[in-house]
Image (cartoon, rainbow, N blue to C red; front, top):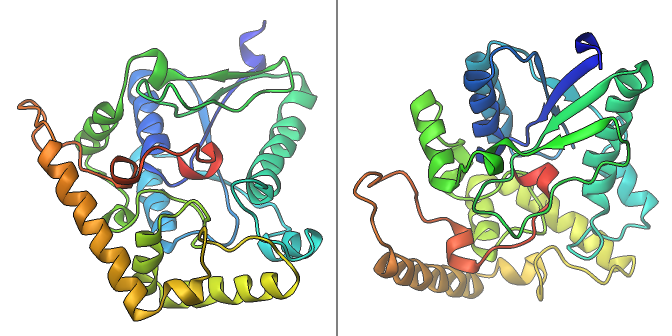
Length: 280
């Protein structure tokens, strides 16, 4: 294939893994003219936007914002006010994947390009599956996995770059929408403290959805109204502290990386099959 008919794209979620991949590719493959992109749902954490700006400064390149035009509110109506859930992830499909597919097709595939799309699945994530391309000219590449870079390696990349972790890692382990249904209950509690307006907006969406017969609440097994009661918050925080204490007691410190791999909610609550487009 002609070299000038190949494009390279890398999707950023505002999360640590995709940021580390962007830094890694920038440093290890400076010969590649990679186009970085971010698909904005209009419901992202404010910390995500701040981190993307920092990343642009490091890369010395603007991150293309893919605006789906029809944001969450539009699609909520189309789905009869039923909330997205782990069982019906229409938010990822309509707000992340469809805009990407439309953009890469119109900009590159329809113009005869072969596109290499770099996805941030780590070497220690055998349980994760990448995006499945429907076009033979859209080739998915997994550099972190292929080069043996695990969670500790990702942390090394971020720390050595000077960027470190996104600020929301102080209270939450994943990027994505403020009301993402993959949040752990402790993260909903922290959302109340960090972004109370976003929590109230999520409650309003949930109330409207339940009134329209939605079988789902944002947090499994209880409404946000129930979750935000003082006694429930206390129980959630107590459970979190017990999990954290158990995890610290079992933690084996690598003398070569004494501070590089903090305990996060995946460690405390178990790995989940998150949406790659939102949470990497």
